[in-house]
Length: 308
Ligand SMILES: Cc1cc2nc3c(=O)[nH]c(=O)nc-3n(C[C@H](O)[C@H](O)[C@H](O)COP(=O)(O)O)c2cc1C
Image (cartoon, rainbow, N blue to C red):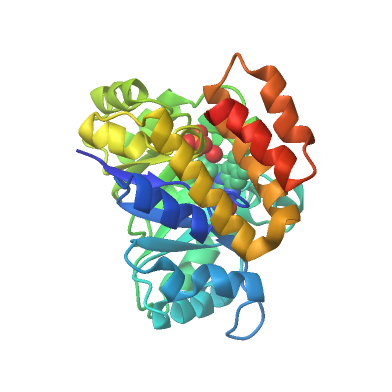
């Protein structure tokens, strides 16, 4: 069986979310953190510090993700994270956000293959304390034209695993993953390979493995917020029950309130409901209540309408 990874999702799959998935359902081999950008010196901003505090990730296999186009900054971060006990670090070559891309980071780096080559040459010329994996898209605008060259760069460096979100930057999150371009990676990638993109059910997982039986891993993001029990279901065939979803939700809500207070929690829960709401296609009214609520009482009443 392929390994199962929870995708990094900024503002959604932070450490509390990861802990609560693990506690309620499990089935995840590796949890990836949302990206962190190196700051000057060997230190973290407060929020990053919380995310990477080893005590917040205890008992889970967590891989921190770094976003940068600076090889020395990446190497510093990798050393700092290794000192904290992390045994792998992931580099982000996929983020499509305009501000990130403008700085030649995330999927913006994919437009500059020479720059990528230089980055990896400089990074891997240094002695690094832990393996480094990469999460990438298939290119910036046109996978057919760009992907073979990008994959060739990855193949020339000792990347421990390549996680491919099978879209180009200009797709953002729309359309469907480009399975033919992914098949090219399946045939040519030298590192262990992980697929990512639009896996939302056991049937999706099985169809993927049917076509690519030797995949090392499958990463799931939005599908795991819609169905936090998806990893267990893929592994054991046991579906999440409505009562389990309610307990998961209640635990998550309480943990968020304890950390952030009600106002920020409502904001965060609305993000979660942006995906969880897909489970309730016929409950538009209740979902609107969630998105409009301003107080804890309004929120809890709207959530109860959906969760029972
Ligand atoms: C709200 C949101 C935040 C994301 N944040 C990150 C991130 O920090 N790092 C990253 O590599 N990918 C990030 N992604 C991309 C996901 O990890 C994943 O590649 C993408 O959603 C496709 O997988 P899925 O169809 O299983 O969701 C984010 C996606 C979304 C929707």
